[in-house]
Amino acid sequence: MTQKAALSLVKVVEGDKDLRPVPGAVLKVTGQDGTVIADKVTTADKPVLVDAWPGTVLVSEVSAPGGLERSGEVRKVELKSGQTAAVAFADTVRTVVRKLDADTRQPLAGAQVQLYADKDGARTLGEVLTTGPDGTVAVPGGLAAGRYWIRELVAPQGYQVDTALKPVTVAPKAEAVAVDLVNARIVVRTQDRVREHVVVRQVTAGPVSAAAAAAAE
Image (cartoon, rainbow, N blue to C red):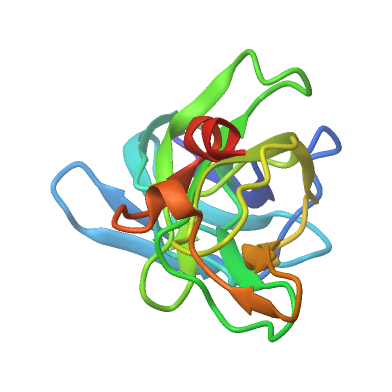
């Protein structure tokens, strides 16, 4: 006699070695013909279970918990009579870089930054990111839980470039990460006063890169 099978579903943060369940994700189970078998919301204490007849089912994520990037993956699972199949969906953490004026905390557009997988800056992660008019730029696809580093390559116009590698920690939680980086204005000191100014040799140029700033000193 054919028995129903069980499907165990859990949502975790990618990179979480402890595979702690994350609540609030909506997972959908369908048959190969597109028939919806179940829509389940994940919990924080244990996997959610779906009973279904043996055969092939598809599991996808409808919506992710706040702070996580929704996985676009569709899992194909073969269910067998009387058995339980386990599926863990891993989402990355939504990560945003914010560039701010060191004194006023106003957002700064035009900064270019690079993420790295190591503290020596030898292994880049993704493309160079540029902050928009609101001073922010999102890391495409988010980041798995772990340790990263970030460096400024080009400063906003009129600001000092800071090329130091700075650590970025992404915790295994369903909480978005904001990486705040600040810039100090470039100033020119005269005998009687201090006035703000773009680097003299770059007065008609755009953003100031690390190499250009060094050459102008």
